[in-house]
Amino acid sequence: MKKFVIALIVLSLVTGSVFASEKIKVDIPTQVIYVGSSTILEGGEDIATAVAITALPYNDSGDTSDNLDDYTFGTDTAPDVVYSFAPAADITVDVSLCGSSFDTKLGIVDSALNVVAYNDDSCGLQSEVTGVALLAGETYYIIVDGYSTSSGPYDQAMVGAAAPIPGETCDTAIPAAEELNSCPGADFYYTFTAPI
Image 1 (cartoon, rainbow, N blue to C red):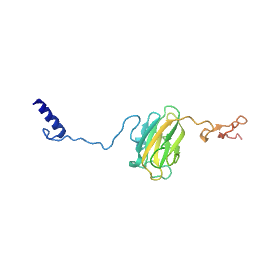
Image 2 (image 1 turned 90 degrees about the vertical axis):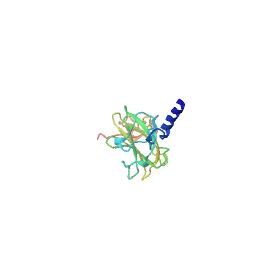
Image 3 (image 1 turned 45 degrees about the vertical axis):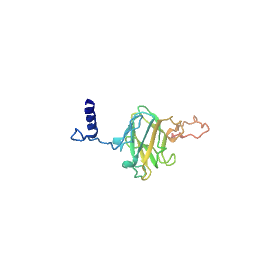
Image 4 (image 1 turned 120 degrees about the vertical axis):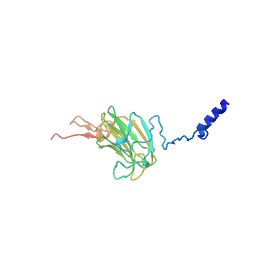
């Protein structure tokens, strides 16, 4: 008899029809969030809700299709998502959208919305910026955007990178001093302000 009563109680909890006068409502989530190893779901809607990147390397994926067009590089009207990164020390980074499923644009802006780095097509129709110098004490925003009206699933990767070689780019031009600099054979950028 005891076993039979326990079975009826269990049955009533499952079906809600034997002893319960009201069925138990279970809400089914409309969105699944995966937690672990920096997989969040996707970036934030805008700078105010940007998803913080707290450690490198960082990888995430998402889909821009259900977002708004909050930021524009050029004349695009594509939806975008935003990540934030505040380095504790000066660092050089590479950020990539290679492997994404649509024609992407990628931009990094500082807290005053000045463009620090930008790319449209680097790996096919996807975007990547490399050797981007970021300063400690500043918050940067990584904006995953699309070309024209393009949107869709994306893969984002951000890693620390080696600093550019002095003279390799305009940003790392070598200060030239009269009669002290000589070219080592390869192309290098120099900066020089004539005293007179």
